[in-house]
Image (cartoon, rainbow, N blue to C red; front, side, top):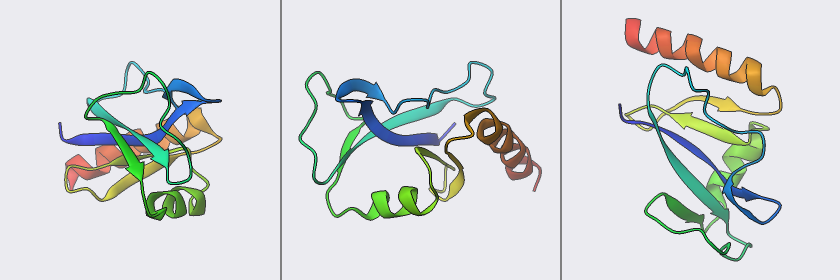
Amino acid sequence: SGFALITWAGAAGQPGIAEGVSIPEDFPVALKTVQLIRAEDDFLPGLRGSGLLRDAHGEIARVLDGARARAAVLRPDRHVLGYVGDSVREDWAQLRTALTAFYTR
């Protein structure tokens, strides 16, 4: 589909995506997951693969922190479709609405 979820790698030093951020099973498009490591953090044990990136200059951290988000969903053109923050259920619902608008424009 070309859509991607970018999120912080691991929660509390554990491999996996950020705590509270999981793609709903019924989300209407497939999302490629890209796990981020903050510039100041060490690589976490057990994390490997092409979906693992370091935010070397802190640019992505500034965007996510500015949006008070744990993750962002990117469109195929790499613009942000929306964010997942503390209101996870509501945020995924808003992403579904944004996705509908994306496909009906």
